[in-house]
Structure formats: C-alpha cells, structure tokens
Length: 209
Image (cartoon, rainbow, N blue to C red; front, side, top):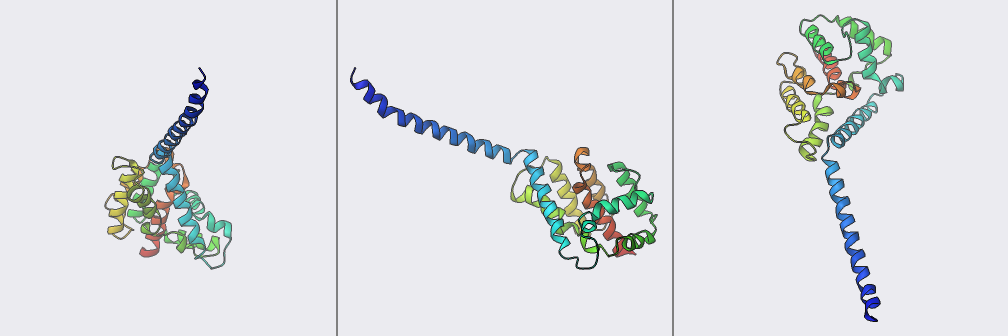
C-alpha cells in the first residue's frame, strides 16, 4: 500500500507529458489542414492582390488625390457604368463589355475625359497581368500548393498564362472570358477579383488608341 503514492507520483509527469504531446500534435494537424482550405487560400490571394496594388501607388508621383489613386479601379468601373458601357457589376455585363471592346464601340474620348476628371494619368495603376494578379495566383497554386488542379483558381491561372503569352491585351481568343467565367459569382462581387479585367480594359485602350 505504501508503494502506490510513489508509483502515482512517478507516473503522473509521464502522463502529462504524453497528453501535452498529443495536444501539440492535434494543433499542428489543425493548422496544416487550415492552410489547405479554400478560405485560407482566398485570404492569402486577396492579401497578395491588395499589397501588389498598394505598391503601385508609390510609383505614381504625378498630381492627384491619394484617395482617387487608392480607389482607381472603383472609379474607372463607375465611369464605365455612367457612360453605358458596363450595364451592371456581374460576369455577363463584363462579357458584353468585352464584346463592345472587340467591336471598337467605346469612344476613345471616354478615357481622355476620365484622365481629365481625375487630374492625372492613372496608367501605372493598371498593371499588366504578370505584374500583379498572375503573381498572386502563382503564389497560392505553385509555391504554396494551397489549392489543386481541380480548383477554380487553377483554371484562372491557366487562362492568365495564355493571355500573358499573347501579350496581355488579347480579347479575341477567349482566354480572358474563360478566366472571368472561372471565378465564382460570390468572388466576382469583390472588387479585387474584377481589378484584373479593369486593368486589361484600360491597358488595351492605352496600347491601341
């Protein structure tokens, strides 16, 4: 009977040690599993996009309101709506806008008036695909392996690769439309997922005027 307290005293630290090891293992597994969830990948992508576009603001040293520079995509999108080129903020409306661009139905004065309204040329705030969006898709797919080849992000990335190969500004081969249609509707409601297409629209005009 006298040996029991001693045995318990010696066994208790071992039990606690093993329990602590189990807890740590569960936490590690939990963290790893979270890194592979769609929400985690989306958060990483969205943070990457925000950072890429924020960095561009520092390159625009011309006059202009800082708030306008930070919200340039929203302002450009609103201007497209006001002038009747973009009917709504959804994927079908953007596809119709692509068709108008193919048919040269957008007056080039629209872009000049937009610059006058801003008080500066926002050209540098609309980067090429490879400078922003594609890098962020690469980060979550190729480097971090957060999503696999069956994901919508992978489909978008493949389309962006093809667009970049053809010179970033091609509305005619279907890759831009494929990228757009691969993005879930609820994601497309977020401006950061539309910035890509606004970039291409602005750059297309700049290089084809």
